[in-house]
Length: 132
Length: 132
DNA sequence: ATCAATAACAGTAATGATTACTAATTTCAT
DNA sequence: ATGAAATTAGTAATCATTACTGTTATTGAT
Image (cartoon, helix red, strand yellow):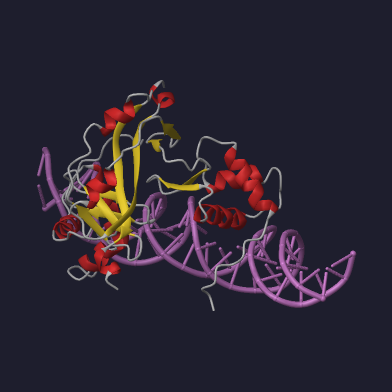
């Protein structure tokens, strides 16, 4: 049988992953998390990183970002905010802008299904890549 | 040497792929395009489908959609419009809503890089999945 | 503190989408 | 028609992610 939600147990590995993510503002990928957390715990496995990132995202402690570059990014900042992704170097930057209020209502107006949320991201060239 | 843009030559396969895509409003994936175009040309290869979809997207004849489900979708409708993706069945539906004007200016206001565009998509449950 | 139940782990294999490679074919300007 | 270059079919390789398996860690109850 497969339905029952497992009881959550503590794990050093999960704590490390969450702690690392909180120190970063650049929205690292699973692999970047792996390479960094490994410096504290060289035995941690990539699967553990993926599993915990997914778990943390599922329980809402972190955010999973799909920014169209084919790789998932993760963000410990779960407040609603927007992201920019550089088409050249791939870096992800937080945007300081007000929330797009009413966008869901706008979309829902002439739509028969149910809208849970939206994802908006911006792309272009970052400052560093322009100055080069 | 690798820089020079190749001269574009005609190809039956590319025509077929574009023609097929224009008959569909459901934003198929590369694999779906492959399976369908194969019925007209059983020898066509998946690599050819991918290469041409990428090429057509690069020259702006079709649109590549990254809707966060890990698979690229393609759309022959290149006019700016928004999409909804069902979290349950994965179907992609066009949304009838006005364009989010000024969103780029809004994002660019306090940003130092250069913004080329944005991607917005909505997710939730489609009508068919609700009625079930 | 010990103990069993079970969640989580490390390590590795498997998957799935996409891209890269190569020899053969097609396109097209001459 | 012809030859250079783009395109193809077929296949192998890559990359991110997930699944599997036997072992270890956590937890609540004794």
